[in-house]
Amino acid sequence: MHPVRAVVIVGGGTAGWLTAGIIAARHQPRMKAGGLAVTLIESADIRIVGVGEGTWPTMRSSLEKMGVSETDLFRECDAAFKQGGKFAGWTTGAEDDAYYHPLMVPQGFSQLNLVPHWVRAGGGRSFCDFVTPQGRLCDEGLAPKTITHAEYRGLANYSYHLDAGKLAPFLARHCVEKLGVRHVLADVVQVNQRGCGDIESVLTKQAGEIFGDLFVDCSGFSALLIGKTLGVGFKECGDVLFCDTALAVQVPFDTPDAPMASQTLSTAQEAGWTWDICLRTRRGVGYVYSSRHQSEEAARETLRRYIGPGRDELPVRKIPIRAGHRETFWKRNCVAVGLASGFLEPLESSAIVLVELSAKLIAEQMPACREVMDIIARRFNEVTMYRFGRIVDFLKLHYVLTKRTDTAFWRDNLDPAGVPDRLRELLTLWQYQSPWFFDEFDRLEEVFPAASYQYVLYGMGFRTRIRPEDTAESAVLASRLVRQNERLTAEMCARLPKNRELLTKIHEHGLQSV
Ligand SMILES: Cc1cc2nc3c(=O)[nH]c(=O)nc-3n(C[C@H](O)[C@H](O)[C@H](O)COP(=O)(O)OP(=O)(O)OC[C@H]3O[C@@H](n4cnc5c(N)ncnc54)[C@H](O)[C@@H]3O)c2cc1C
Image (tube, rainbow, N blue to C red; front, side):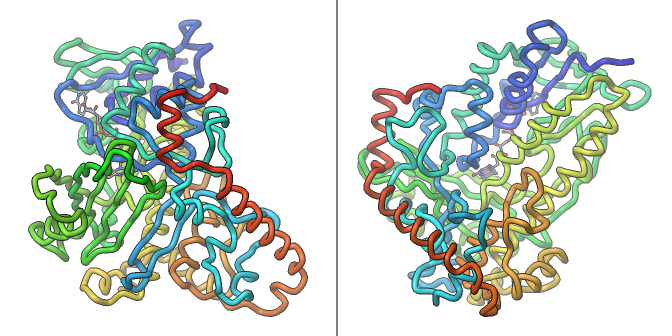
């Protein structure tokens, strides 16, 4: 038997440190007893990608389980609240064209599907407002909790907008000081394999040879272990998701006390979309576009127009995006997490949540020995391939529901040849029944649950045919849930503070720890 005693992570970006923290927190007793060591190697010279400011609510439980203080996260990572995404201009491009994909599921979601009742009610209110308070909270700039809620708790579901450049060093300190992760600052210059093909060690320029039983490739786009060493191919998704370039810029607030939105604003543009994220001290803005449909010069002009006059001097960073993922994620004794495993445009902030889910799977299924590793690898590959596929479907959904035909980018997105078969099938099905809690895609830890599909479909004006009998029996329960939502909306609007007000209090007084 060849026991797994040494886990070696290559890469110290968000993926590397989250993976280290999740594994180390899960295996503290073994680590303390000397049965497992977690080492993270990162180059001092190769910068982390440093973007990735939108997260999912999973981040709260990941950080809480790692023992991270939420107050410290707010103070040290410039973090702010995120309560969902607002999509402007995606359906028609008109001035008033916008909808929310909030983080709270519809009222009574596991009891009753409110879609037929919303359709029956005749569309006076948006689907989001009909089923959840969260769109209103975003409209009003309200926080999801108050200062009396303990860390990680709240009235409304939430995640974070944060400074990605600050998150990695923040997690590094915690992992090293509290969880016993060994941190090696060195460049990997060679990867050594055994005769069987397993990775035996990595040779570093500054710290010599480092041996391991399980290697986690978090080396970012370079995919040093999984791609360059083990030769795992890359499956391109550019024929479905056309955006291949990002331009990112940090924009100061007009005044230090400017109101803060707690939704990521994604605005459709000629050949892609802009993101706009409020941190406490600045905005993170960017334009993700298809270089096949717009020149870089025109894209820079689109971004300039979006951020407004007088900001031409702000430095803009160009980041190429290759939409796709590895053909397999865990090969031999190496598993890829983060950008090394693949990347899809950040329209729904799906990259970091995938890191968390992958790291959790590795931690939970940590192979006891090399002899069982291939069995776990097979499971991991199946689940991760499924997740990438569902993210592709969900991102493409935003494009195929558009009614925009004003530019080639939007027209090309409607070409059926670029719509994945599974999504096309579901779109046919959803004309007659809406996605809901019991849908087959609601697997354990689905990245996008049925509620997310509901928000996007009905936010973008998709029509599901409803028969009178779909609502007859459940009408009483439905009106109770709708009234409950109205009551909750009024209560939350009355009780919750503004985003900036609460963040200032957290900085001054801190939240109670759990
Ligand atoms: C434009 C853009 C916007 C994004 N927005 C979001 C978002 O809103 N939400 C979201 O969830 N995700 C987003 N992402 C994705 C997110 O940024 C990444 O998933 C996340 O940062 C993880 O990156 P990483 O750790 O895999 O790679 P990196 O940050 O690139 O880290 C790679 C690490 O590997 C190390 N390394 C590389 N080679 C060597 C070597 N030879 N020796 C030693 N060390 C080495 C580097 O030093 C570095 O520490 C976005 C990405 C882009 C491009």
